[in-house]
Length: 312
Ligand SMILES: [Ca+2]
Ligand SMILES: [Ca+2]
Ligand SMILES: [Ca+2]
Ligand SMILES: [Ca+2]
View 1: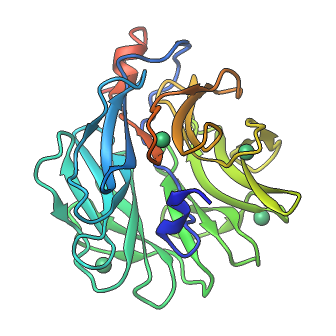
View 2: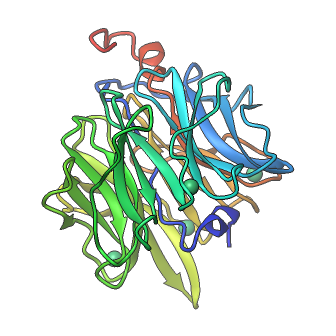
View 3: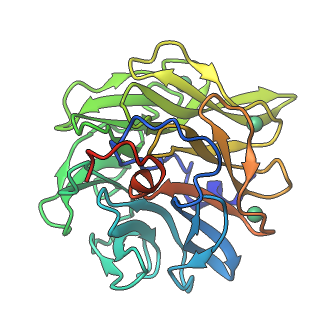
């Protein structure tokens, strides 16, 4: 079992894909992009960043306690993440260079996960403060927390749609994990994956038309997680990876051309980049430790799609 799955009871979460800057047709490795991820290459899980071609891998947190699930703010200036440094999980935020690491949640309960609203004003997250994991939203400074789900089953991994109107999340309320969607105020919670298999982890395409997620297949009694894409209404689920190793934590590049993910196919978790149709997976991290949970800097779009000049 890959190590990131040990981070939580079931480690159902979603990667944050935050930029709404579509339109690029760029191919190649997006060398100017920056990807945040987490790795235990130095004593403990910590948050790292690298260029889109895998170069310049640099740690931003020190790993004295576990730090993971980085999520870039829409303007690229900050990274939210989950930290256990205060004895239980909290949502932290730091500047993109790792400075000014600040606890936003300050709660004795287990707070984790972070997904920024596209306008940067709010952060969706998960807390078990009412006894089981539910999705909450707070202001980006940690104030004004509002509970969005209230189901006795686990609701985790919220991810905002690029237009800010909806939030996907993973729920186990139907007896097996599904990708759910709700309005950003918590109304109209709807099962969109609707399959007997275990579905978890969602990320939106930059244009909001598609959702990439993970489906757990079984082969000879062994779990084989694969990455799928579906239309945002749940139709036309299509498998993108086909490998007996676990493939998980997908994230769409800001220009829409690539999907980052993590896989154990080379013996331990590495971050890979594939084309959005699943072709040409490439190992970016090439490190003997566990490397997982890619989150793209939205600023990557401005440096890789010069023709698209109308975004911030
Ligand atoms: Ca806490
Ligand atoms: Ca399911
Ligand atoms: Ca697989
Ligand atoms: Ca590795």
